[in-house]
Image 1 (cartoon, helix red, strand yellow):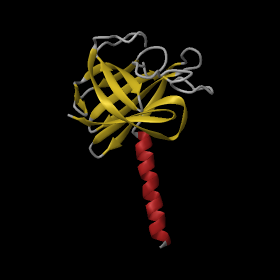
Image 2: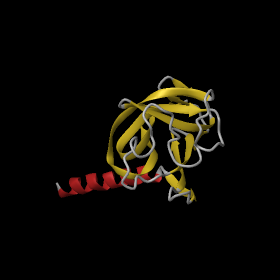
Image 3: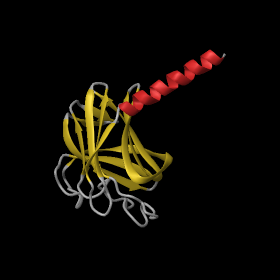
Image 4: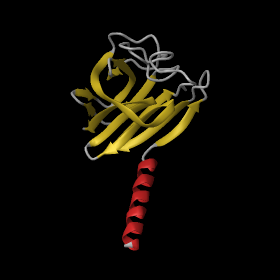
Length: 181
């Protein structure tokens, strides 16, 4: 019995270690007003993915009330420069096909639901939102974050059928699954 419990604990530790190694995060620059900018990278089903974004802190503020995101409006989903997403393989977020390339990610929080917005316009400051430049939009699932996130955190979780993009801030988690190819 002790051996099997030890084996299960060892296997769980190995899985957690493997999932942590799947994401590499490096600081890009310290940002303004304490919003550091990071580049996070993953390999999911042979696709190399990266997201560069600013990580604003709540500092006691409430998202949607005291600080972005604002209800029903496109949000830069980060701080300062627009959030950049790069993939070297085509992806599919629901019905939204995203060819290999570099894009800007926005989200629209509205009425208890969120939408992911993938913009073809890149290299800009986070605001104003570049109207008419959307590659497309896809609905996200809204839920509770596994733990409260003081700083905005964007992550990708490896799944059996591709991956899931998560946006965590405060106690909110917006997620959208995707497939590669």
